[in-house]
Image (cartoon, rainbow, N blue to C red; front, top):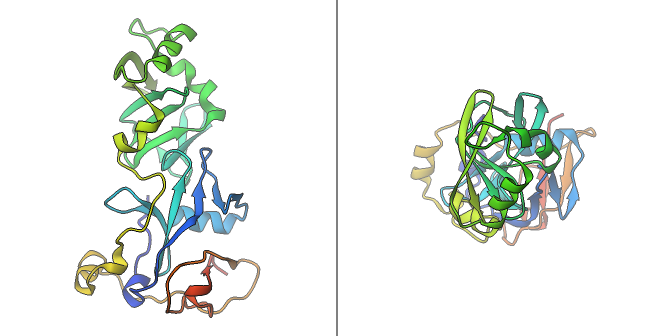
Amino acid sequence: MPAPDFSAMLRWPNVPACYGWLSLDRRGRWRLRGEALGHAGLNDFLNRQYAHDQDGNYFVQNGPQRVFVELEYTPWVLRLVATDRLETHTGEDVSTIRGAALDDEGNLLIEIPEGIALLCDRDLPALRDCLHLPNGESADDASLFEVIAQPLAGRTALTLDWVGQRVPVVSVRRSDVPGRYGFVASPQTVMTLQDTPDDEIHDRFPSPLTPPPRGGRGDSRVARDFHSNGDGGSNGCDKPWRDGLMIDVGE
C-alpha cells in the first residue's frame, strides 16, 4: 500500500501526538470517540495515512501530527468482496496469505504481508469451507470446536486453502494475539518522529518540505476535535494544536 506522507513533520517537528480519540473496530470501521465515520473523503484520508511505528503502535499521520489508533482487535481487517477476493479495510487487495489462526472466541485471523488481520465476522461463514482437515475435506463443527476449546495447542490439523494457497492454522488465545503478532492494541505515550533529531528525520524521510493545506472552503473539509495535550504550533488550518486538529480531505 502507498506510504503515508510524513513531510509536514519536518517543518513542524514538535506537534504533540494524539491518543484515545480515533479507533478501528473489528469490522474495519473508523470511529471517532466511538462514533462510526461515514464521510467518504475522511475515510479515504485515514486509510491513506495509516501506518505503524517500530514498536507496533498504529497511527494516522495527519500533517505534522500523529494520531494513534485504538484497535478493537487487530490492526488489519479483511472483507470478502468477491468469491475469490479479499480486501483490507484500507481497500488493498490481498494476493498473499502467510498463515492463519483460530482464537478461543471462534475468530479467524489471517496473516498477510502487512501484518495480522481479522476476517470480518460477516464473511466468516463464506470462508468456513476453506478450512480443511488433513484428508482434504472441509472441517466439521466438532473439529472447529476442538481447536477453539484448546487455544494453547499451537499448530492444529487444519489448513486454510485460499485461491491456490494453503497455510497451516494455529490456535491462539485472543488475549495473546497482540504479543504474538507484534502490535499494540491501545497505544500509550510513545516517542515518535517528533522526538527524533532533525538530521535523522531528514535521513529517513527526505521528501520535500510541503506544509499542510491552509484555510478551508467547501463541504469536503472535515474538522473534528482530537484534543491533544501539548502546547504550541499551528496546523496550517488556522486552528491551534492545543485546541484540536483539523483534517483536510481535499477540496
